[in-house]
Amino acid sequence: MRCRVVFDRVQLSRYNERLMFDAPILDTRRFIACADQVSGVVMPAQVPALQESLFSGEGEIRWSLAGRMDAQNRRELEVTVAGELWLTCRRCLTGFRFSLASRSRILLVAREADLPELDDEDPDIETLVMPEEIRVADWVSDEVVLALPLAPEHPEGCCQVDAVAGVDVTRAKPFEALAALKREI
Ligand SMILES: [Zn+2]
Image (cartoon, rainbow, N blue to C red; front, side, top):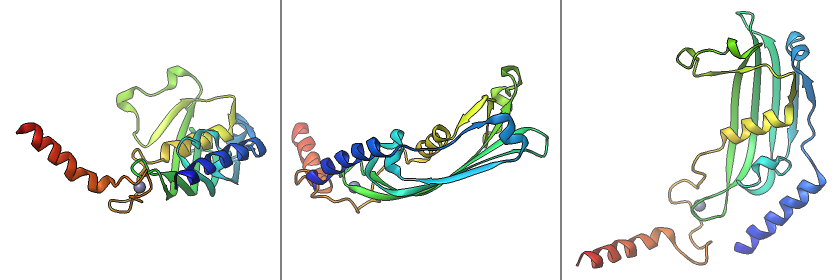
């Protein structure tokens, strides 16, 4: 199993050389004024910011970006990502499938002075000073990274316990307890 991990890492770097995440760069003002929308599909292996978390570059990420004026005539962007990734379990270092589903609304203001005070900020909507252009690949990448679990791991009891040099993490605990007991004595 350990060899498999190394093999997959090599595969990932080869993917990176071959395929980059090719997404448009948008003129923000125009994109929002025209209520435009862009969407696409990218392989996890093609998103550089994900490489540390991935067990395998397989899977897919469907993404979309939409611009609009909201009901209060404010510039708004909506970023959506969904799909499937193979992440590395932090306990047993093998892979597990993660279903990605995330959507963010971002308000864009003209000047820093227009940013809301921290106390007034709506926790569900981020507000940013409007950039002149939007690098879609960066925005999608950020959205995916923020949606990853803080503790990537198999559900309790589902780890591949023999995967890491034969060490069984669940069975190791009684020995720890015994060692602690011996120290006390
Ligand atoms: Zn695990």
